[in-house]
Length: 97
Image (cartoon, rainbow, N blue to C red; front, side, top):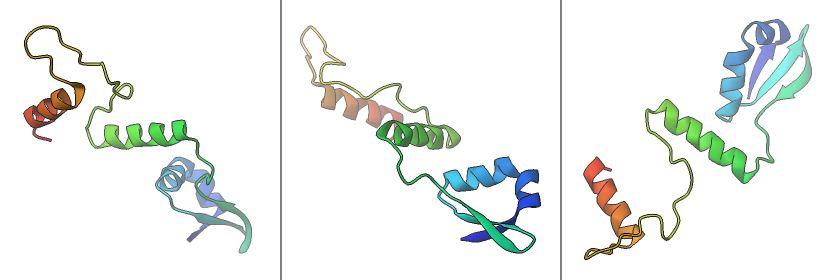
């Protein structure tokens, strides 16, 4: 937990909020007295967590999936008829993942 003066917090709010998004917690002081605590939200919903994961992947240069894969997403007609997990494995292998 770090301590930040209210004046510095106002001047660099975006940078501090990025740190909070990464899990850091700050005590906000005004004239040497702690007046607030700034930290990550403990009650994130599943949608918020997926959004945070997508943001992390994007920062790393990885394109996150648009949605979760379903069982029949890669249903193929014809001779192969590979199931979704097999196609996922082939795609991962071809991408070097």
